[in-house]
Length: 232
Image 1 (cartoon, rainbow, N blue to C red):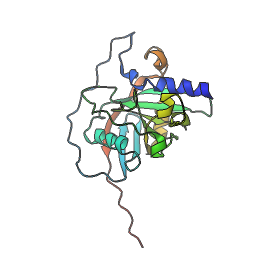
Image 2: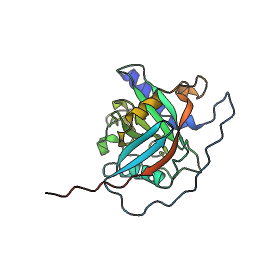
Image 3: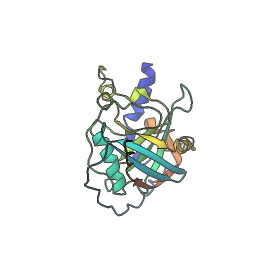
Image 4: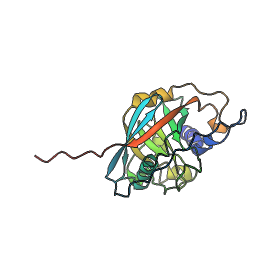
């Protein structure tokens, strides 16, 4: 079990390295950066829904502002300012053990300084109470407190990414910051996960995890807030 956890955590510890140019081909040009709009200054409700329109179909996510305020608000700000528009799902990490499909997909700004907002504080799962279940959104990062505009979606339960506060390993102790859930479109998530993998792109642990044809996020838009039903 420990070996499996280390295999899982090691590639996740370099989540953003997938944004670096690969060695065997010239770096692909970055997507054109859209004109950014100003985010709303109104307080966010406890939960906010965002619709990701991709080449393979829509994914609707709900981020938990109440329990993971820094991570969830960050994600909303990227959507509101159109910084996710034109970015891609570029990674599918397949884990060979357990019930299949098993792993995650990753998308975002790929550390593009023209798109990135300042990094947000790390919110460990033992504080937020949000575990890495199938469909959970989680921040990609280097060290804790460096997360910006890259995120992962769990294809299956990944408890090894939850914080382990009693661990002597700093990475395991911190875990990763889960902050939301897919509420529609898990079929699209699984289709992205099943897309062909490049045999040459990626370095180190990333080799064998990069999509041969990244899946474009055409738009990411905040949906109208749900209106509570009146009390009878």
